[in-house]
Image 1 (cartoon, rainbow, N blue to C red):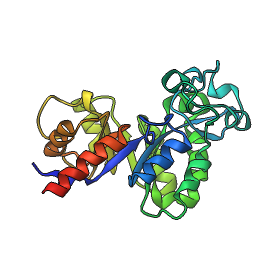
Image 2: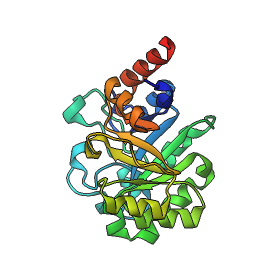
Image 3: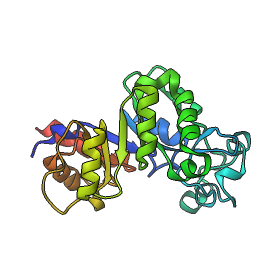
Image 4: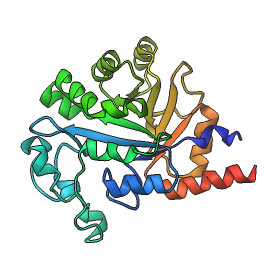
Length: 251
C-alpha cells in the first residue's frame, strides 16, 4: 500500500473529538498536534459578519434557542459554544469565534492552510454576493493560506472570480451530472463524505485533489489512498494522525 499519499491530514472543525467543534481550543489543539490543514464552517450573523459555526441553528453547540441570523456578531461571540450535550461542564466558557479570530491563529504559521466552508443557509439568507464578499474581505490578509469551499457552485465560482484563488467543491453525490459540472469548473479541490463515494474504483481523475471526510480509521484511509484520495479529513485528529505517522515510520 502506498501511504505516501496520506501525509495530508485535514482537521475537520479542528480537533473536534476532544474539544467543542469549530472553537479556538479545537483549532489550537490541531495545530499543537502538527496538523497543517484545517477545515472550518462559516455562517453570517444578522449584521453580516462571518462567524465560525456549522449549524444555522444555535441549540446543538450553544444550548440556546434561535438562529445565527437572529443575532449580531457582538452577541454571538459572547455565546458559550461548549457542546454541553457531549462534554458536560468541561469546556464551560468556550465561546463562538468569529472568522477573524480563527485567522489570527495563522500568525507565525505560514505552513497552515485553512479550508473555509461557506454554508448554504447563509447563502440563501443573505445572498451569494454579500456572503462571498464578506468572507473574502475578512480573509484578505491571509488569502494565500485559505481555500474557500462550499456545496454551492455559484458561491465558489464567485470566490474564484473575485479572489483569483483556489476553490473547493463539496459534493452532494458522485453522479455523472456532478462529474460534468466538476470538469467544467475545474476546482482545485473536491471534497466528499466517504459514504457518498461509489463502493469501489478509482476516484475521478483531473487537476483537482480529493479530500475525503468522515474518516476515522487507518484501514479506510489506506483504501481511499489507493483509490486516489490526496487528503483525509477527520475529527479524530490525534488518533488518526498517530496511526499515519506510525505507518510512515514503519516503511
